[in-house]
Length: 267
Image (cartoon, rainbow, N blue to C red; front, side, top):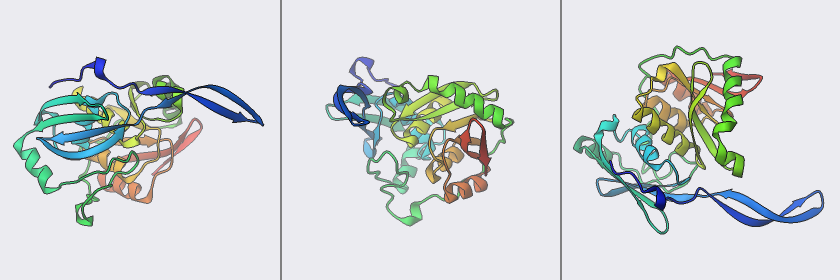
């Protein structure tokens, strides 16, 4: 695979002069804001999706997207990848096997690049995949208040963009002791999860030995992505939707939400 040249990568933040209004006083200061950058995903020469994303970890993002969307079933079906930095965005060219490409053409989606929508651009209701396969292997991790508290205590150190801008979500892989092994940030919660999924695939992580923690709500698409790549435990900071809960039950994904330092809700 051809990795991008780091010297060409877009900065993830900008510093701007702002007027801050607080308690009747106005001050002029510098503020740090997160970048939102269009990323086009092109499979075998055909543009498939344009996502608005934080411009970092884009190789793992593209790989995770291909896996979590079911375009490929294993990373070895991605034969080549090239990241091209353009003036107004990034184009990621992926070459996939003929089997994967034929399947993609049968279930073609054109995603209008919104950061928060998992089904934007789906051409018809019949193409919505609301019945996931079962997760094959159950997790051996015990999820309790102590584990969640350790994750929450450790996670801020892995969120430099959130600390600087207050604008990004994180997706983290945490081991059975609650240690954050790896975390990815993005303005889009789906993008952050795809980056993590790409990393998990690249490192052949034993998904039964840990927990995926998301700093967002648990929407349908996030649970669906987890089920598709065999992630048996998903924990989120905010609420789940009713559809996300149904998908989790059907797939055998253990879902924990409203995760706080003093408790959580198991669905």
